[in-house]
Length: 498
View (cartoon, rainbow, N blue to C red):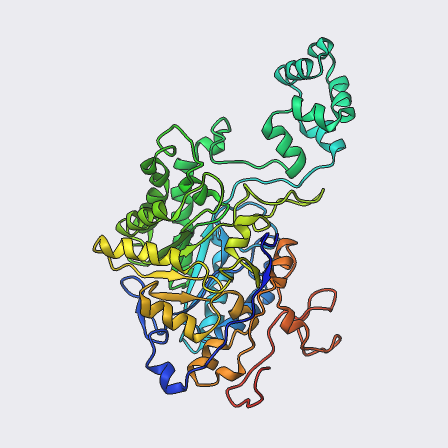
């Protein structure tokens, strides 16, 4: 992702690790209720991260089991399984839950986490819907095959190029003229969406109501999410988290950029309507099974939803029956960098992506705890409304003091850690048992995010430095250069940082 204009390299915050007695008396290591029947033993939380380890058909693999088993050995209060597709459609090595045939594999995942954590970790699965996005084409492919040559396109070309012959020209001639056009001519000729499809790859939006499957999303999505939640319950998960954040379908309905005029956009109530209907459909399907959601406290894009409106969303979603609200920021397609030819746009490469996952190269605010004010605003609004729904905060939190102070201030009820938990899946257990000096600290360079962008198996550079290629005891990437699991740790270790 691009670095901020005011480039400052921030050092990691100092860390004074608690004794075991201090940790036991802390807020962070105290229990929290998440729904009618789920109590997490601690307020430590590993949010959803996509590791690209599923099979091509979306099923659970041994690598998936190993990934979640490794986090579970660190005994977080809550572990959220990666964004898992609710449709039974090809989506690469991303987990899916869009058909009953996925339930046995997901049940194996549940059992693996139960066993590895000794039953200490509550396990949720995050469920997601996303619209089509295509790879950036070559000009030859785009103008030769993908672009629809319509009378309207011909007319625009005739006016832009002052060439009336284009209005009656054969399709092949129009395509050839497009391929030979200068950039200035293309800007004048193509519509903004056509130019975007050339420069970034075609991307569907929830406002594309001329497409029947997009127009019908309000009728198709509630039963799809509900069915996914039913499968999550059947597989044995403790709960389900609805993905209403970042660049995906449900976040796009909440967005201020949603201008649909069918009652599912344009106004605050219209944009909230489908998210509430999905939540209601899920609740009707699974009863008092734990159901929470993750949404944006700020889209961090021009014209997007800001924290004031997000706080109102939080109140409405809590009233609608959400058992927790997990607050994130940014990560949108609208400001993503144009991808290379043959690759798809990635929603964490622009300014909003930096706000979602800031690195040590940041503006004066720095990356650490950067997004806590968003969770604090949502929580304050929810409490003012007389609701007790727990709020989960995340974003550059990597020390006990950061987490404990956030809870003490009332910024959140639960504090999550993704990148630090990736760097050291045992860090919660190390802190809890008074062994914080052994924590392997995340450097916040986003090595992991760079792998995710290329849909490669996600690892941590700190792991990758800690093995000898060719070691048969270490599970590695296909090229043998990256290890797929964090190094093991035992509470009996006394060797400082691993």
